[in-house]
Amino acid sequence: MLSRTADHLYWMARYIERAENMARILDVTYQMSLVPKAAQSEAALWQPPVSITGNLESFNQKYGSYHAAWVMNYLALDEENPSSILNALNLARENARAVRVAISSEMWESVNSLWLELQQRISNGLNESALPEFCDWVKSRSHLFRGVTYGTMLRDDAYRFVRLGTFIERADNTARLLDVKYHLLLPNGEEIGGAVDYYEWSALLRSVSSFEAYQKVFHDTIEPWKVAELLVLRHDVPRSLHACFDELLPILEQLAGNRDEECRRLAGELHARLHYGRMEHIFQEGLHEFLQDFIRYNNRLGMEIQRAFLNAPVP
Image 1 (spheres, rainbow, N blue to C red):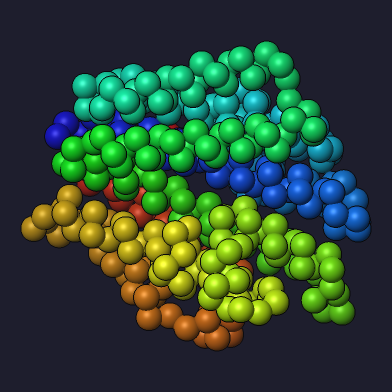
Image 2 (image 1 turned 60 degrees about the vertical axis):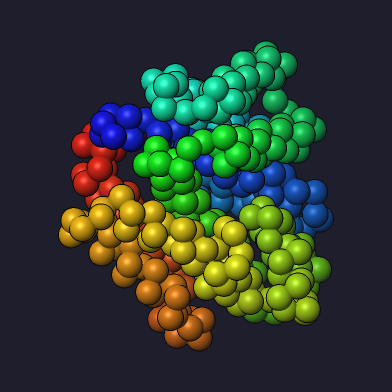
């Protein structure tokens, strides 16, 4: 496969996943804004979503303060924000257009109709009351795209690059979301276990579609350390870090073949840390430090994938 084609497929999948993840982040923040005393101020509630994306400096330069309407517009529809849902879906469509012969016609129709419908929604504007329905729409269309991909695409290298992009992006988002929750939103010790605390952790689990999974695994009230275990080490939770690397490692082994690629070694190292890790050891070293280290390694893995297979600069 031409590296140019692989690059388009890889980033098409990453941008679709990025749009869905941004919708999840916006939705969970809005749901928390409905809980009385969930945050001391509007800024305290709406700053973490921007922090998750790593765009604090850019946002501050443009807006200066964290009002709900400004954060929603920045993360959903701002053309100057490279991580916005609008830009992610636009780039997903442009990458899909470039490789129409490498994907099924149903995949192209899914991406193209997604973009056209987004244009109609943009014309109607986006406010707080419309946000939940908008986020649900983005998530459902992302699910549709993945379902169409799984059901119609030949299981060749093109399919592997699509899957590769999906799980690299998903692992990054789960780590960022969990890290910001612990680092910025963890309540004071005397508040842990309270009603607001319960709703915050419930909202986090729902944002990664893992609320029911938590109930089935632990049969217990929601506790922060158990949430962390679910989203870091559980291999049977689809959006956990462990589950993402269960998918990534065999894909890279198939793509690398007999070549001794650094990206394959990095993926194996990260997978081993997740497969054999214990939550008590992670907490002893510090969950924030572990997640920050994971994000750096995951980004490095992405750059090594670019170097080994795609031969293109990282967007």
